[in-house]
Amino acid sequence: MKDFNYHSAKDSKEASKLASSSSAFLAGGMTTIPSMKLGLATYKDLIDIKNIKKLSGIKVSGKSVTIGAATKHVEVSNSKDVKKAIPSLSSLAEGIGDPQVRNRGTIGGSIANNDPSADYPSACIALNATIHTNERKIEAAKFFKGMFETALKKGELIEAIEFQIPEKSSYQKHPNPASRYAIVGVYVAKHKGDVNVAVTGAKSCVYNDKDMSKALTGNFSSSSIDGMDLDSSEMNSDMHASADFRASLVVTQAKKAVDAC
Amino acid sequence: MGKISLEVNGRKVEKEAPDNTLLSTFLREHLQLTGTHIGCDTSQCGACVVHVDGNSLKSCTALAADINGSKVTTIEGLETNGKMHPMQEAFKKLHGLQCGFCTPGMVMSAVDLLQKNKKPSDAEIRDWLEGNICRCTGYQNIVAAVKEAATKM
Image 1 (cartoon, each protein chain N blue to C red):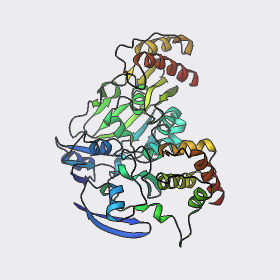
Image 2 (cartoon, rainbow over the protein chains, first blue to last red):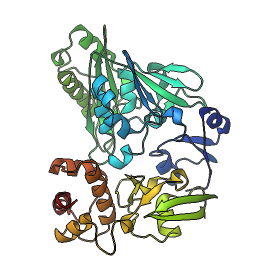
Image 3 (cartoon, chains in turn red, brown):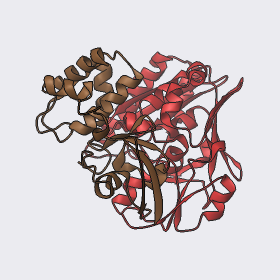
Image 4 (tube, chains in turn orange, purple):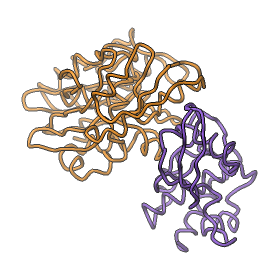
């Protein structure tokens, strides 16, 4: 790994002041460190944000669950408050990677990285999340821009993610047996008035499947999406799964999620 | 370059190390604690698992700088006065290892499991050891060893 300067920021202000075009924020490091070791990314400065107290913790209000960006997956999966308010969110956190990854990896890191197969972006879309940064609030639907690409500007730091508590929800993924990343993951959330069907792993970026959302908003039953023939032309095809298999998996996982709600 | 201050296996250590020093490198090359193994070096195999402030992590994917000030326990820190830890005893007794390369990480991960779940089921043990790979296909005996250790700890 190429050398860099390590900084531990005291607060968001210091973190964004240290940021430059050749820096990265370091949270759990579960992607940043392996990417740097493999030479896929190089930075002059790594700005550790884990020690900023304000960025950790979970708050539940009547309508929403707000999770600090540096909150670890294990904290979300163990939180009684999250389990009670949005059980599907705590089980999503429990299914990320392995225990050692969950002891380090953070929700903000996962979202900022926007891996096409990551779990948390689907939760943001399904649960109408608002991403709070040190500069503004961004709706999840406008946050995830493409493969590893988000609406974040250089030096902009995610501080918290606010999830809307749904009436019912479930996240079902078909994990890669080795990495536990989603080959396909579908997060179904029924809100008052509409249903979101957030899909991860299938395309280059998480998305809300409009056809399934419409069908389920009309009739919230797995039978209403049974046999739906999704367009696989933009779906990923790799050694783990072909595009057609992924298209079929999206429907299967969505049905499972609806049945589990 | 910065000063790394840690408590490793109950002993305070302070060393200068470049900022890009991984915890696994710091333990093996700066402290000569070579019980922590480096297998895949891509945070998949789990041979490098150690405990930091009581929780297991993969030391090949943590910077020494970023855990500065923490308490670290490695496989060398498990024994007491030359007596093996119950988890190590159980791995030995039930042949929970063949070549032994994955064993330090397996043991450290399993000890963390029993800290959090005193009586895990077979399924819970297998689920927890998700991030530890054994290529001698010794999982049956590893699970048996963790169950045995659970009765002794």
